[in-house]
Length: 157
Image (tube, rainbow, N blue to C red; front, top):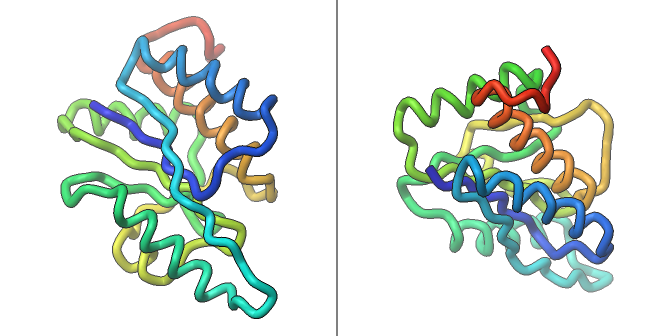
């Protein structure tokens, strides 16, 4: 199984990127995992949020294959505990899902195009965090999920 975290824009703070990269290394013991980036459209003063979201959607859709199982990381999504998220990942493993793509959108959220095409949404918190922090939080939770699945002592039950 391959898992991709697809992000709009690159991380401009090296300490967030370095921390996320640590979890990328750890995750390689459990699955093929990578963080990929799509271009962050540069907004002009008169650019509307809708135009930016639609441009991001085009960039995101270019990275997604027809057979991919896609989750949008979104404030309107379903919340999971670490244990229930690990069960969701394990279900994908059992059903032989080839590729799962988790998507973190841009500053304005997702285009309606993406909401219509990909109904599965996950909310990591009711609080708002920077997208750079969410990348790290997601990587840690994915690593935690695999340690739960594999009965590794990283997660204390």
